[in-house]
Amino acid sequence: MRGKQAPKRKIKPDPKYQLAQLAKFINYIMKGGKKNAATKIVYQALDIVKEKSKGDPIKIFKKAIEKIGRASCRERV
Image 1 (cartoon, rainbow, N blue to C red):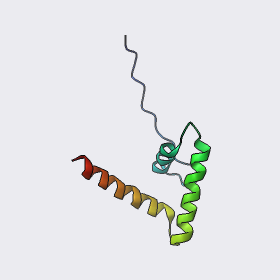
Image 2: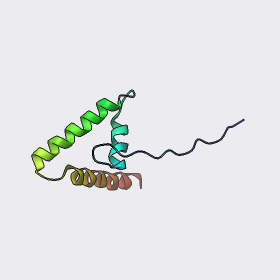
Image 3: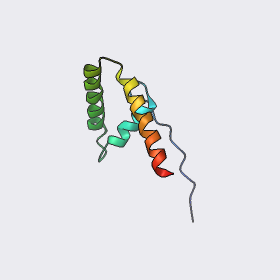
C-alpha cells in the first residue's frame, strides 16, 4: 500500500540576501547535512566576487546561473 505523496516544500530564502535561488544553491553545495559550512563557503565566494569585480555579487551569481541553465538545456537536446 502506498501512502500519500509528500507535499512539496517551499524553500525559504537565504537570510543574508533574501533569495530563494541562492538558498537552493546553498542546499546543492551542502554535503552531509552541513548547511552552516555550505552557507559560509557560498557567502565567502560572494565576498570574493564583490572584491574582485567591484560590482553586485548577486547580479553576477544570477547571470552565472542563467548561463549554466542555458548550457545544460543544449546538452539535453
